[in-house]
Image (tube, rainbow, N blue to C red; front, side, top):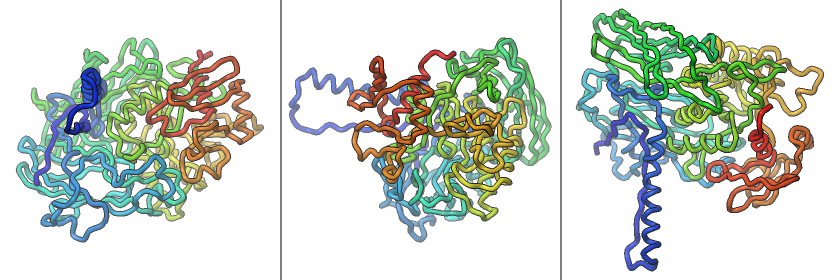
Length: 628
């Protein structure tokens, strides 16, 4: 069976099918017409979503006429849950396997999937495909945005690659394996989301408060690049290098300095001289600055071209005005464009000034109010399409959030793109939660994840902080200091995202840029000089162990009032908001009753699936008030 491709420079959305039953209608014509109109509207929603969002592919938004070819590799996989001997072989009979598209989850789950309920083990994916003819002369690769746990990749029956970890991308080089345009190929991917203490997060799922949903749960792309092309930041594996790296300095409302570092590699057999052209365009695609620089590359050589220019009267990015410029990168041989792509950037200056708080673009910003976000959703687990990632970001922003802490791992590139568009700051966390392995290899893998997440996300204006340590984990001091050093090393420029960690952990209070603290830490005699950020507050979750925590509430208790019992939560709530009230949940959303009136807060869908505490709602309400 030959797999199908969808050549695209826009995001790919899977559409739902609708089926009408046969037989006479029991409804009047007007009702039938309304139903048809409703179905038409639902069918159009993915198209409308596609019109207002862009999806990056391996860090680039595709650029028309760039010479780089991108195919959507999501459709046409064969899937089997469980292990089967010989499933990697070309002649293995997979005709009885289920046909699926990715993003894909190995098992449909109800809303509450924590506590070891989800399937854990091996799952196989196989795809039969032909290398397109227009890939002639290109370096062809497959880019996986994420697959859970351990992965072993086979091409035409040959084991070609292994990958550890479920939250960061990896690439399979097809051309290096001798594959040519027109060749029929078989790709087999073994995924395994079983417990494994040897790589992060490492914690047993039985004691985990989220799930490692299995499968190839993010997008897969086929990419064709010329022999002289811009490298991929993760594949290049260079400190603060590879790909395109954009950073800024001396930012004000009158002027900003822009620095663009572009690494180009020559995989050919002869010396090439090319020009690296960088064009900054505004939100209306009007060129603002254009620079070009020639570079000579020997066969097999890579070089970084460093370009600098100034922008007068820049439009600064902020949550209230998330203005995005676009950097068009092209590698040219004469008038021929060999490779290229678009990097969206926001010009902004973020500063944490200790007791003076957080400043943005030279002005006090006020409190950052937000939420933690896990990437799972009811039934589909982690396998959310790009449109759903975008919707989650929009709902969080509409609810009043200005910052999101991704809990507790890097999340889908589409979610990061959406946060850039919506004006949501992001704290990006390395994978880990309440688990430490004393084997030195475990710490090395954590640090590798941190480097890769910085290289993947360093150009996003939404990224405000890195969380390079393991959440709620008693790690040693030398680990904390090495994690901090990596953030400096991978982003060694002014305006870098700061590093944040728990103030009570070893090595943090004396060294980190921003510290996580609990309510009351700012009142202690030995309070830290840095800004204190409360990473979790009054959390209410819907999982298996909620019954044993008096600051949490289980959905099984029903839609009754949920009051947080910890005295310090109540005390801080009263101190910070001076509000008293109650919470009631109805069909139209949530009503927060406060002395002096009732405030309707409409929260549904993705946000409603995760229960919301009264404290959270009060904070969101407070965030909607004018800043002083």
